Length: 159
Image (cartoon, rainbow, N blue to C red; front, side, top):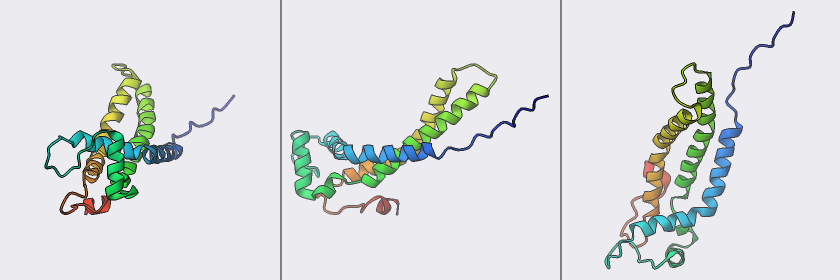
């Protein structure tokens, strides 16, 4: 007579959210100045009188931002970018694995567990991270040409 060991309860693995935060921080730190320039170039409509400087290309934009705002200007909204990426990566890594397990255990096989889990995870990540991306974009669009800067940072925006 053999006794089977009791089934293990699934625990939330701390490695997933930590890995998401570390990878998000590293990615955002390295590519953030290019993300900032991309956002600024997208709103640069070429008007002569605008609150945004006129940029000719990516290199010109980086040098112009660095000249007016210094290195700090190239990282405007950085904390919001790190927070948004951490939320997105952490939620995606944790929730997708859990969701896929739940669908695999389900008796209904209307959808592929991977597809249903991906759709569910994507919706959750969008709902949780999009407000943070909006804050990041608004912080990135503040320039020295504005008479006043409405937001001093992530905390100032939330306040």
